[in-house]
Every structure is written in C-alpha cells, then in structure tokens.
Image (cartoon, one colour):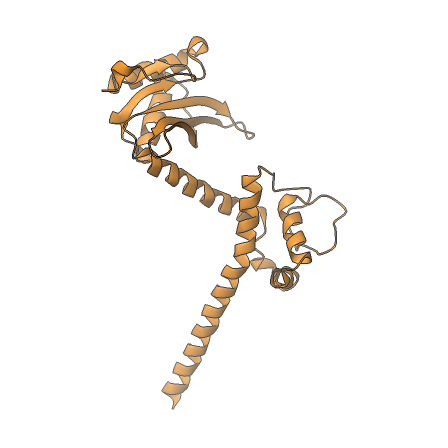
Amino acid sequence: RSVLGVFGVLVQLNNQLKEDILQNRNMLKPIIQTIRLCGRQQFGLMGHQDSGRISMKEPIQNDGNFRCLLRHRAQHGDNTLKKYLETCSFNAMYTSPLIQNEIINIFGELIQSDIIKKFSKSNYFSVLADETTDIAQIEQFSICIRYFEEELVVLREDFLTFVPVHDVTGHGLATVLLNTLKELGLDLDKLRGQGYDGAATMSGNFRGVQAIVKKSYPKSFIHSLCFSFPESLLI
C-alpha cells in the first residue's frame, strides 16, 4: 500500500507539473505574439517603467509599447491573460526586459536560419560589411549578404549578424569576417563579391580586408554597396 501511495503521489505531482508547464506555455503565447508585432511594425518595446506587474490601470508614465499592448489585449477580451497578469507570481511574469531580449534573440536566430536556408539554393553571393560602434561603445562588424533568390526571381540583400571585433586591423577584420561566414554555414567557394561602405571611401583597414579575402577567394570581386555581378565572375 505504501508503494502504491507513493506512486499515486508521484503521478499527481507529474500531472500537476505538466499542467503548470502547459499553462506557462499558453501564457507565453500572447507575450511572444506582442513582441513579434512590435518587431514587424518596428516599434520600440521599452518605456520609462519596464519592470514589475502590468496594471490594468493606465500608468502615469509611458511604460512602453510592449506593456501597453499587453494591457490593451487584457482589457479588451483576453480574460485569461488579464487573470494571469494580475495574479501570477513575480518570478513567473515573463514580461521583464531580460525575457523580452531573450525572445528577440530567438526571433533573430530563426530569421537568420531562414535567410541561410534561402541562400543555400543560390549559386553565388557577395558579402557586405561595415564597422560600427554600438551604444556601449563596442566595435562591431555588421555583416550582410547579397544573393539571387531563384524562387522569387529577385536580388536580395539581407542582414545576417553583428559581430564584436577587438582587432580592427585588416587582418583582424578579415579573420572575423571569414570565420563568421563559415560558422553560419555559408559556402565561401560561392563568394563572388565584397563591399565595405563604398569603394571610393574605404579606410586602409578595409583595403586590407579586401586583399586578404581576395587572396583566399580570388573570385571575390571588389565593389561598392551598389553593384551588379560581372558576368565573367559567375563561373
């Protein structure tokens, strides 16, 4: 009897755990959908107050588009979300800036994966890169690719990633660029062009990047950001 009793308790605990997981997943859906909506409409998420419980009362200060949209949804028909926002524990609200950033990063990875999947069907591509500094004064390489998408018959130019750089010499930038492309799964034998913020105004560092990349991949023609593939290189 004691064994059966313990087994019954374990079953109950397991069922409760499953129910909690399912409930948490259901509560995450409107949060994820709201972040996705903000991204599609290019809305900033955060406001003057980004943490704490989301009240159904209009705040004195703007608390950002994300919290405003969740409040609007809860006030106008989503009673499940309303109950959750009003009663959930403080360590399971899933609305903090940290959670927002985690979800945004996941969206970024999915978009990047989709771009690479489309690119994999293309025969050639060019890489477009520029050095920039973010708000934290960290040097970064912004990397885009340009390729022909056969299904839609269009020439696409897609952003891939930002990569922090610590060595801004030509060799350091070229190493970061090529390693990043390889890590993302791009076939560098298909590389037919490289552009760095306008061919006429490139810095000495970018000229070094050009030479190093071209030495490893001789068909990677140098061009400005507005270009077309020379037919002689598409072989």
